[in-house]
Image (cartoon, rainbow, N blue to C red; front, side, top):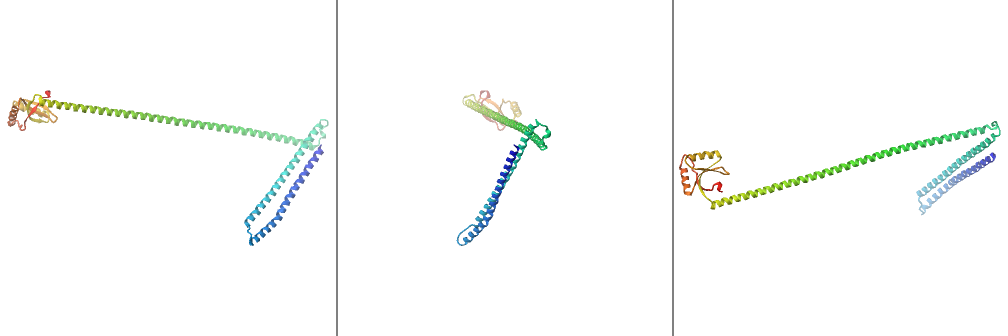
Length: 327
């Protein structure tokens, strides 16, 4: 079985070598053909350029650009072939390594079965070394897998912790924004309520002021009407008394500025035997002598007063007078 596996490995190596050689030969052939065709194309370009002088128009720059593009395409194709050859070589080496490892594993398994029947002294040292290498490789793979698993768990844990922290931060930010929004809304409502309250108070104050002004105006109007009515009634009463009431004739001798002056003048007249009457007015206190039943008697009293030098009342005159209690 071991010989068969070695034969298969050799066949694989031989086939890979043949394929690699074919690829390399093909690439070299293409490179050679491209190099051979380049001078020919250059000569064709020169011929085209010469023929252009005879009447044919050829764009030299376009031709150069096409040549450059063809050159780059050839180089790219060669690079791709070389890359494919390298990939195939790597695959070939990997296949050889896998075949060798598989053969060693099968041989080790076969040898392990044989050890059940014979002593371990008959086992070749190279197989023991292969088994040790296998165990070492398996241990290293297990350790690497364990480390990778631990790293993955740690990354997941860190990612979960970061996600949790991000979620908590986002929730805190959303809560803060919601609180700020609620505060702003409460503030806006409070301001609107305060504005409405201020507006209501202002309207009530304005209504009260308008009502007060209207009442004052109404009272002033009523007072004015009452005063006008009173004045009208007094004027009507005075007119009635003057026309139809008891008239008395008085001699007005002076108009005192105040009550003291009026008393002084009244004392002088009373000392002369005259009957004195005082009547307050808006301009002062009126001093009169009388009353007399007729004008002639009143005029005689006036003359007596004006002729008395001690009284010094030259401006006395006769008036028709109605007492206040009869007005």
